[in-house]
Image (cartoon, rainbow over all chains, first blue to last red):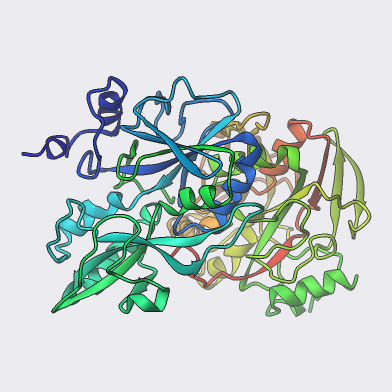
Length: 266
Length: 266
């Protein structure tokens, strides 16, 4: 059994505790599968309103789960008692749009003017897709995703923040495509329904050249299906040259206490 | 036929044009009934992040529909081509938490550091309640609402912004209560489902003393049902003593181009 499979039924708080004590610094994709996982973006307060506005205007790639008060490291709604400085397996530090460091703890970097954002992650719909029997082509990737690309779909800008939408793709068996759409549309906090089904070139994508993850060809009875990707807000922050930004490392997510079965939208 | 009934089937853009030219300065409750109407709050950029965070943390009283860029008077998502300085029938101006003026145009007051927020309004679910045959007690109020109160339900604060939730009440025929809940729960941008059904004192309310609107007694086969009210963000901004704030006048709403039939949540 892989280590992450061991924590498949763990709670969000349990996974965060493992990260906090340093026991876990690997991807979270198959952990705490009944809880929403989230992308993390930390920006200075000077950019907080524009970044939040960008997320509000682009809810598919950037579904806002929780935002801290200025300087407060706790996500009070999504994870009471959490500490954003320690509760993520791995962090990336960006300065002037360039990655300068990768760390497992940001206590020394946290500032009183920092604001942290949690944005939904597609991992959170995986358990439902699995239960629903949605069939993906077997590819050499634990998450079943074959890569992520910056598409030609423009996000709506907000002040200084702008970028194109990053999408991730999965090869779905043609008989499962409608079911994959129906199931994911019920999880708006996990990016919701796909933004594109079929011909990758229609959204400016070359399957053989992913920017993140694994390249592959889609063959036989499979259709490439593209969902908005939580890397989008990171790319937005990078392209907008926010002077300093801290994020999780791809696939090393913040795990919340919000169950995916919660009727969070009323 | 009342004037507002004449515009029942108008579009949001048509109602805004009537306000812009000065032809309409009255309540919008029965106008453009197929479009989302919205509460308006304008604050200085210095408060924009905290105010937006307050709305995100309290989505039932403060469902965020659209937010402008700093200094931009156009709501680009909800009403392309709109001008927030002219497109509302009546505005209230508050300084240091006190109302100081009521005007029909704010072109002279708009500043480059202003940010405008549109927050959902319960009027937007009225057509669906009507079509669904939900029965309200007949009271002397066009909207069927008998008043609004600051309840004992605390909103989650955000920085300097905090207040209790304002609710509005309607006397619903007991056989219609479940239907009223089911229908309004489908309109999260119009405050969604009720926050309380029955005994008003349980949420700190004395029916005979509304802070806004008409007092009444609920008799016979009717149940008092309370929905979150869009006055809440105004009260929050007032209680937080934001130095200057501009809002719509109660019931004189900003009418958007978003049809209530739009599958806006994916």
